[in-house]
Length: 119
Image 1 (cartoon, one colour):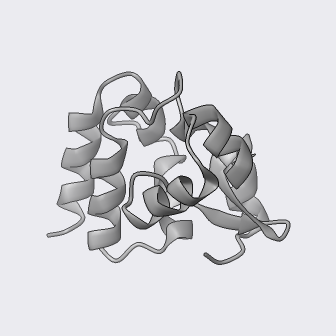
Image 2 (image 1 turned 180 degrees about the vertical axis):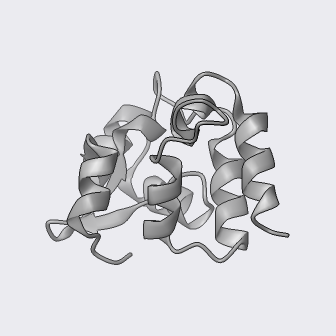
């Protein structure tokens, strides 16, 4: 996990440390690290510690569709920073950002756009 730049930090907004994410998900910090490796979450280093976007955790779990989107982005060769930028940048065709669409249970639309980048 590499440090991120300020514009991505600002795009994402609210972050959770590894421990905060673990508490929100009711799992251990090691389980959160495994979730990051499995593309169930995306973690980056901020201020010297691993953090995940707070938007990736809803009511004690990850939103349906997040894992698929993160896997598609990784398979497309996106770095974690590029994936964050894509997930938190508005897309007029959705409308809104991909993470907002996923949180609104419109993950299929997000997956279609991510898959199109594979071509």
